[in-house]
Length: 450
Image (cartoon, one colour):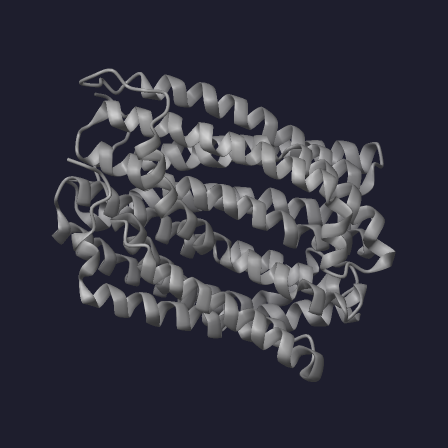
């Protein structure tokens, strides 16, 4: 069997295996965030502040759907990884096809719902009237492309579950550059504004989803199964659902939180919303290495549990601490020194309300990024083991704190409460998940049948 990777999660030193695996994931996710940010930069610079606010209002909604795709793919990939670690290739292939069918159906249903209720969704989050039209156009086109987005992200999770984090990186680089090129053509040359940004994203994701599917089918041929495999298996689907739902919650918690506090933020007006949107974009970029470490730990844990190597799981978990604490320190120093430069990428006017809001957001949250790294790594281990109850509870507590604190105190003390609540949720999430990890019950969970 040839998988094309130069490291082995089951035999190499855990630190080496995790780092070799996670670096392409981080770079790939950065490229994904990069072209999302490029949308905002191009719109903010070449269309205007209100257009940026419109994309920002839609961004809070679209990120929830991205998180559903990524979280579902990661949750399902736990089963794929455990079958791979156990050497059961036929079951592994069945799990791959079951995953893809499940999420194609889910994506079509969500796309239909989104197209029908597009304006109502924007109304639910109190989108300001002066940007409602542009936000509606962006969101409607986005929903049309939702099946492509789901397939693309789920297939990336499948590649990762097979220990291949490089192919998703190459695909994301391709997709990012294509999206930026289309943005520039449609927005700058043809002056299509917000509509052009949405169409560019749809085309880039559609082409990337097709290319990803072709590459995945080729890769699966390298694995020789011991028995015939099925295209769909209900029992495997049930195992996937049990892990995928908490994984969706874990991946989407940041974006669901942003969405649920959006109506509060929107009440401060479009200028404050533009600054807040810049801050959330920078936050999304900053948590990439932290979430990637958690996702890598999930795959590492699943493969090693499948192979019966629990000691390697603990050693890999210790390596996560070194990585996320180092990354958190770097981000803190960088944003304290250069936070204004990052905010000014989105906003040409560096003296107005929008810039001031964005800068306060970025500098405050810079002190706390290690919190989400610790919580993501711990959640990743529990998810990879199939122990979903504790980190589901932890993520619900995280979400509840972020939403409750913002809704209760932002109307009284100002928009800054919206980002001050974030690290409170991250810290509570970590404490709950880590306490459960210490019980050792995750070692006894059975995900795949022998």
